[in-house]
Image 1 (cartoon, helix red, strand yellow):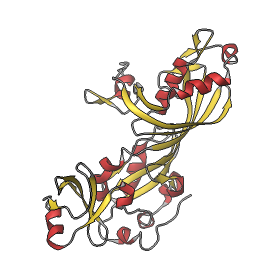
Image 2: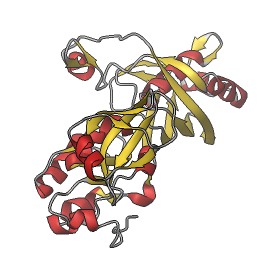
Image 3: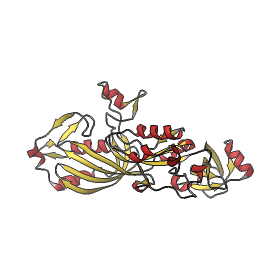
Image 4: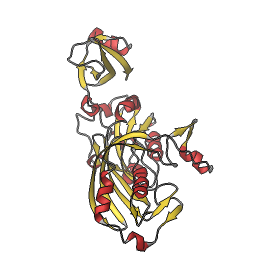
Length: 313
């Protein structure tokens, strides 16, 4: 489902310089960069997606357009929501069903798994946990993506990273498949959770193993399935039609307090100069500095009653 912006929201899209967010429903089998390239070709401007989705997965992919790419660092750390299916009984080199099976258990053993075991094991993944990225991931080691190393036959194990799982809801259990709704921080790999889940779950002292069967991201930050343009529709839109779906980035999306600046202060901000604080806030807090039209012109950081300009938009 997708909707065009109303006249107020599309003012920016109709302006000479186009920038904002386009939310796409990435289809299975395509990369996030594939979506970027379609939008880049149609609009002829710089783009960048927020939070990569695995090629075999689908779901909500916000893409920053034009100057909005400067705001990606302030959007990328927001939480996400997924619908995932975990397949019990096998381990793959990619931690999902697209990979090579490297370990498998008998169906008889899988049939002995108790529902209580599944719930107890899932509880171990809620809260702040340490997670090792999959071998096939976009994380970098010595300047190269892990998946590039893996494709060369070199499997790199990075140190574990702390991530947060806010909630895990069991939608259904039909062994050997468990369907879950997961809300997590950025940096969390559902594939890695499936892998680790299978390492912990045991029957008769034998680890069951698991891999990710399917994955759909249903939310990324404030962007949900209600906001998306389906990939098939995206491919058919003309540049002028696509411009109508550019969503303006406001302070609420960034979850930041808003400071309005005018005249000389506005000019100072555009030059990256600090301004006097005219809004309540605490040291270290990020704020969105806007002009009179509530258009973000810079991101600031409060420090000792000054707003230091961190990035001019």
